[in-house]
Amino acid sequence: NMNSSSSELALIHQMAVLGSCDSQRSARRRWLKRLCDEVPLVPHSRWRAAWSLLGALLIFCDFVAIPLQITWGASPPHLLVQLMVAFWAADMVAQFNTAIINSQGVLMKSRKVVTRHYCTTRCPFDMLLLCLDVSAMIGPDDMFEVSWYRLLRSMRALRLLRAYRLGAVQEALEQWMLQ
Image (cartoon, rainbow, N blue to C red):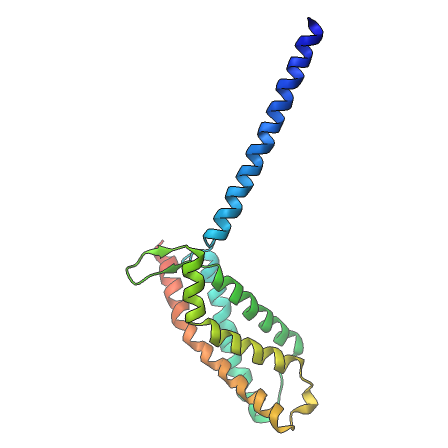
């Protein structure tokens, strides 16, 4: 009798462990599904405001560095260029993961809606700038006199058009301050 009671307890314990494993698995599946269906970032969060401020600082650096580079061929330190390229690449990933506010003022967290919006607005321009940045970063400095390469480096002035994002920075800061 004692032997059957302990085997029953072992069976109950094993079922409880399996049940908790199943609930953990289902919780992980629900989390993964939610991550795939909805974007995790909100446009007016502190994190996005700080990210936008960093982007504004990098745009300001471009306003100083690009005219110097085009005019006199003075390149910024290679590490700074690498960090800027890494930031703008990460920014593209962040854009795909940040909810948008539609024209009615509703926060849209659907990954499909966010992806469609970014791909039809700023993504092509951001991709062009990122490709120009990467090609200018990996190109040797002594090729500055080659005409196609000089044109390519001059096209980096398009990076100054990132200033259009400064309006988004101001909006994100205003939203953050209102919270």
